[in-house]
Length: 562
Image (cartoon, rainbow, N blue to C red):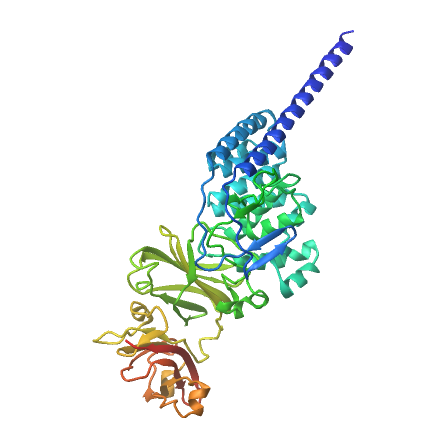
């Protein structure tokens, strides 16, 4: 008779536990709904912005893109909302302790702790999470991304994706909402497995800084996916039920960081307020163009337009209040079977960087799997040259300057082609511009680098140093014919038609040379620019070995008034 009695006791205990769990979950749901209702009713009032020229309708939502100089003033969150969130968090804490295996409670608890600026407590909830492992890992990835630990976030999200069921992983990896034009059409026709290669290249090209650990644009995307899953099935601060339009806006632009409600046109009539979400300032578009996606080594700087009028996707890196183009010069040199890439920049006159501690990095990548990064740190008070050695092949170059304390970032990114040739094959390097010393010209690349210009702009009242190297020309073959031409580029069509173009101020020098070494023969020359009219010029150096083909190197410069 004891067995039936034991069965009844166990069954009763199970029913009681299930009832308690249901009550706990129901209380957590009520607490969330109550908080969001209080939030909507207590939001600070602010007139809705005008639609303007740069706006887009996505489902039930209108997205307005602010113009330059229209940065919004953040309105602090009222105390009543903070107090209501504290009550919600107390309920979620009790629910988490009682039901550590509930996915919904874990997600809500992490989300509202992060919203309340409690990332350490949110990390603790993710660590204690006993729901399905991939969801707990995804919550930890969200926390690590929002605490700017992008390398760890990248690894954590990768682990979560590997643990997911395939269908779920396909949904998380889907970047169709971020694409437009031909890439979007091509991506739409790929199945889940075939999309992986496309996605890997797109994320590689969209990564803001190769010198930073982890791809923060990718971790931002997965953080948005996590937030979307947390919101599914419930009303948002807008007061609207979650839907495809809200998910698309979330994936393309992230989630708002603060909210306002539009003043009611009829104060005596109770109605749900019209709520606007406001996003982080300095949001940028990091996605590549179709041209860069098709051939990264042929990409141009304009293949990354960071602030188009209506961006398909945007992201505001926490480490950058400004993200500008980086002026510089780059040149390629050979060393045996390898290539040296030199990049120099001068931030000493840049108001965002001058006198500040700046990290400069030169990244070279053949694809998303292989890269070389050379770094240099110091104060931005003089030109800086960074050198990276790599295999001679088509590459994507990214020169990056970061002032971490002031959160200023500048970048130059485009493709370069490094051609591999045998040592016996005659060749000439690129031309490197430098500031020539008064006494003697540099005899080696290292010496020229210490005085390299940080751009291709030079003043008309000074001398310009030009350094290059010749490879594979046998000294025993006799003298080599060398010429240097400095030619002004064409003037405008109308000025030519009216006969106002003036003289071109071309400069040409010719001489005979005997290389001292067949492997590497460095040469340097100083050109007096005094008297040359401002404008665009092309420098061309031609080297013709006896009986051989002419080797040519060119660089365009801009001569400016002193």
